[in-house]
Amino acid sequence: MKTKVLLIEDSKSLAKLYQQYVKDEPYDFYHVETGEEAIRFIEREVPQLIILDLKLPDMPGETILDWLAEQQIPSSVIIATAHGSIDCAVSLLQKGAKDFLEKPIKAERLKTSINLHLQRTKLENLVEDIERKFDRNRFHGFIGSSLAMQGVYKIIDSVAPTSAS
Image 1 (cartoon, rainbow, N blue to C red):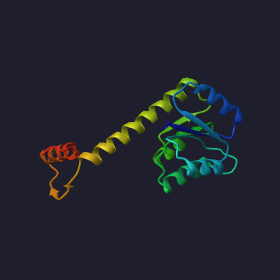
Image 2: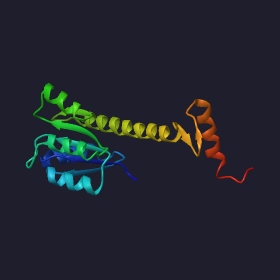
Image 3: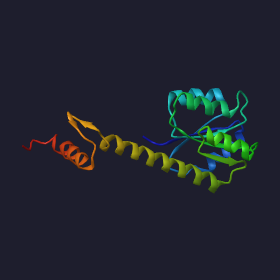
Image 4: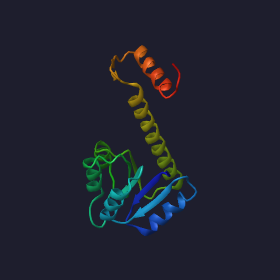
């Protein structure tokens, strides 16, 4: 499954510019112009990363950020705005945004930020996977969470599908 990045930006010219910046990157880059379109898109297919403008024609970008938190959407969010301040950036980062970019965004800054947050998301998912597999208190009736027991559980997992006695 290819990585999806969603740009929520009402300026068509900026959206085209950002699409040009990332045209050779290894992810699918989608664009919507309004908050309503963004919500419909996210409900259909959840992107790994969202680049969110704060000033949209139908609702503030902050409303979308709040909606993402309420719905527990696991996407990372980068705020992109020309109308920001340090107080605004701090507030949005506390609400769950991962980065704050001031417009106009330069090509290298945009690509670096996108790639950084996609890699971070990938690493977080790997860590969660490993913790889910190997940080167990119980395993098929066994009780124990020590390192030694985790080793026993791992051996059982690897031997179970074989026909070894």
